[in-house]
Length: 113
Image (tube, rainbow, N blue to C red; front, side, top):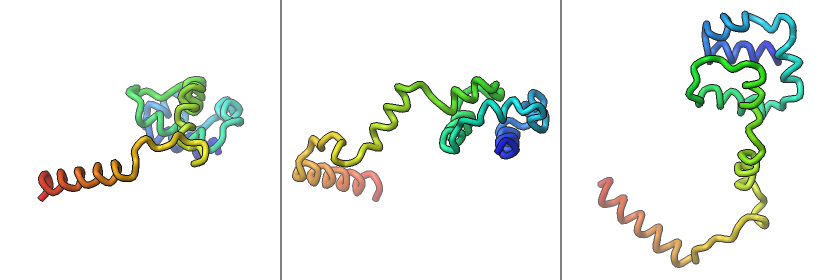
């Protein structure tokens, strides 16, 4: 796993990564520090690395924080994955929804002939 992480970080950061951390996790610090991370958490960390404004590679604690955002952010994202019976009800009636779709279709016809 750590070899894949090293390759991915080198792809993202190039020589900045290898200059800071070398070509492998020689002493196993990163492997130990990321051992409890799931593949989804690591994926979130890589996405955060690519989308954040900092062009320098993160330290191990910084990368862990990118993999596991604060609880409030995780809870906010999780609310969109609730089962349908636990989601908030729709506030529009079927008629209102159909009327809105008709307006959008009309606008598309005008703007995109």
